[in-house]
Image (cartoon, rainbow, N blue to C red; front, side, top):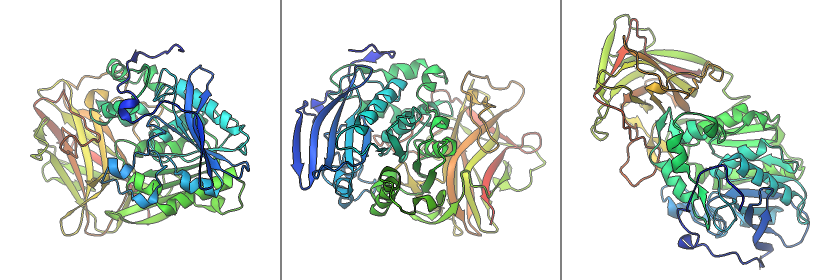
Length: 552
């Protein structure tokens, strides 16, 4: 077994305990499809990939589409059964569709080979397993090059799949495998620390531990993500090794994201599109549920058009697509798509609204008088202990992109504090407008933000005028002589407000959305909040919200 640079632990589950079957290399046929089961591919590291290959029976060379997955190539795992509220319709996938991957029954008759791969060290592939690591990316590179030279391959490889299957695309595309010709990142983070494990420096306590279990089926040792997360509270070389080198990516890319996957994929997908260097790249961003949109027939046709163009040299209209198509949501599964030339949208003005603790309003002018308002940092999540500020729009307004909260806050009885902010839409009749959230909920916010006050130091080199990027290198104590300034990144959103609608800002000491367990989503069970948290506004302490407003 190859040596691992990572601490290892026994697997969290065995393949057999999760319906796995030991490898039995064989060839099957189904309709006009050849299925090669349990194909073993050895990588430069000495680890192996276990793959199932679905390809046309006629034998003509076709482009391979690879889905690189820790979830098990053997297990169809219907998303609609695992997550009943996901919106995925059974008729949109076949019994050969694996979790978050492309459906062979659709792709193979249309002239593609589908390669579903168990990553090294998971299931029956030889390891040890590491996740989102440089070594794993090299293994993926080797599988791409293997697929590019098979007799049934035309030599042009594409990558497809959601979530982890996208995170891996960012990583391997930066290595430039010669046979890689196109990628379709569909909802995937690109910075594991900032976007998944430590939102705003606050440990994530629900999804991140849960996903270790999902990834951890193996016959051998796996990377001990639990130990590493505990031992690396700041962004160091370890976490840098689990962040994508986006600027190195030059391959054609069709990037798809959503406003609705706040706290998991929204930020990383949009940052991926913004930062990759691909001359040929397109962004499609919607406000709906990610899995349902991946399998929606009209979106599968968009995927095929893209891959036809770059894997088959088809003469179609892909290169005439608008560089950006973005949905401006008006309500749940309601909205209008706009077209643009780039991301962030070039026709954006950043508008400030100022918080007034004495009135609970967001105003265009900064209040001259200082005021304070407070809540308990560990208030009952179901008792709605929070601060609420509101601004009613006098004219139609589109909010599209990153928002930013600049809050001046103190915690008289605490050495540190976790602060959570959320944006909501209230319609002209006073009702909060719900949106899809985290792929399975239907009462979500416009956008969310988080910050542990001791992590407030900015990375000045990476921060932009619209995006405060935290350094996460050290813990800064709260100011002794007054409130501390907190620059809180609010994740990207795209929402249309009519005249008379309101934008609502919520500030509190616990998660903005709170669902009873065992539902899995981004939770942050703070262990540092004590006593009141005080928000200072007006005068010397101009707490404000900076919004990306689209010019009309």
